Image 1: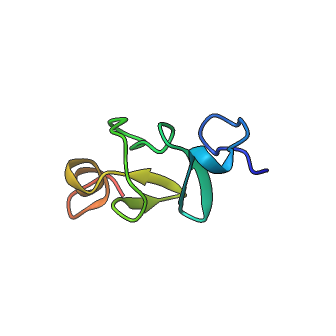
Image 2: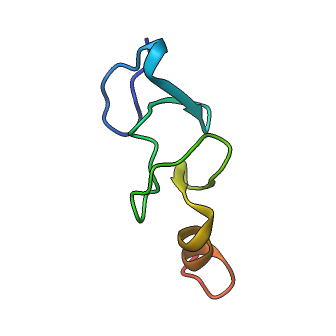
Image 3: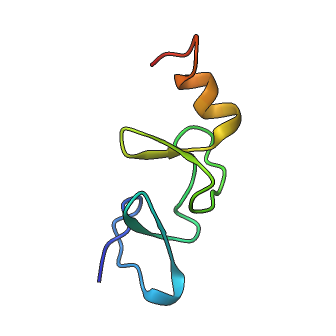
Length: 67
């Protein structure tokens, strides 16, 4: 059974969301910046961490962002 990359606890089949090649708890798949709950395939990734598309990813890593 895989462990959640956010909290480190086991992820059971009934409570998992798969994203970025990992299994997450439903409420652990959150934007690394604003903590908004995300859905698989509907977010961006940077350095293995999920980010909401707008505003966080664009503000942090888009043109004029921190990189």
